[in-house]
Image (cartoon, rainbow, N blue to C red; front, side):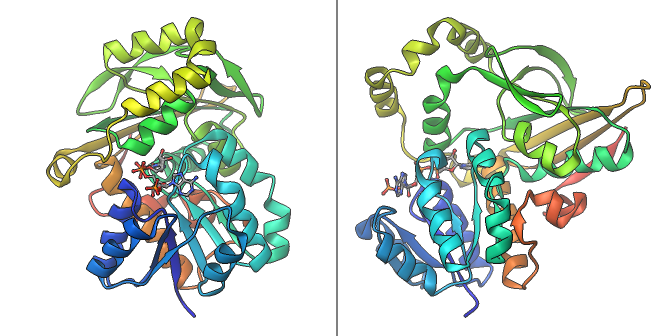
Length: 347
Ligand SMILES: NC(=O)c1ccc[n+]([C@@H]2O[C@H](COP(=O)([O-])OP(=O)(O)OC[C@H]3O[C@@H](n4cnc5c(N)ncnc54)[C@H](OP(=O)(O)O)[C@@H]3O)[C@@H](O)[C@H]2O)c1
């Protein structure tokens, strides 16, 4: 037995990962809740298919018994991760996912002891969120071990997928989050803005509750963390407005309406080929010392497929760390340099 399951393989990102895995000669079992969606893809790629819902505990466990680990791609993960990680703990199978949701990272962090007892690795966030930023965070910490403050920023050129938009919409009324003195602290949406020099481009960034608010603390121990992204002017205005309309955005009626408006799919192959991602980070300490670094890499969904499969290949080789893990904590700050098309610059 030396294999894995991609669950949610018919979703935009799951399918991209499944296709990339097949191109690399990997043989994952493709799974999802809908047989009619999973089977045609598996047949096309010459892979095995399994269809079961996450509520069907028996079928879920039966499918996991066949493999070493799962790469969970069905999100929003705040709705899908519990049954999957629960089954992984019961059966002693590693768990990887592509979440970016702070609440999910925190829920997984609480499973650290149980994961160690089961001898499994629980590593959420093996996609664009958080692999490059997590590696950048640890790189900055390595450059300035006395760091007490960490600022990260990312800017992606390209469209976003159905699932990313659905997850963002679901959390739209929840406000912002930063880490302050080691604690995840709620702040208003679009709490701060600042100019960020990504090298090739200079942009105005705005704070968002991105996964690193949770994970960078586990990777670096730095107690104060803020994460920025770049948004089009109209979206920035909407985000600021959500401070007042958040309660409304969270209602079932408005959520149902908004979720139905989200188009299926994501960037096509051409759009992905043209896309790029830029990351910048700064670490500083109480004495006023400061280090800055940048990363540049492929488009976000291409990067997600490559980072998720890079980590999957390591686990297949028996290279894993038991317990709750972040990508950089287990595999080091240079993990991201193993991803083609990625460059890192220290300023
Ligand atoms: N970390 C990152 O950088 C990163 C990158 C890409 C995506 N993501 C996240 O990954 C998730 C998927 O994104 P996407 O664009 O691929 O979404 P998508 O195209 O909407 O696909 C979602 C997939 O999840 C499945 N699914 C949803 N709810 C489910 C449930 N309750 N039980 C079983 N299966 C369920 C869907 O199955 P059906 O087709 O049967 O509905 C489909 O296979 C999102 O949460 C997104 O935010 C993260």
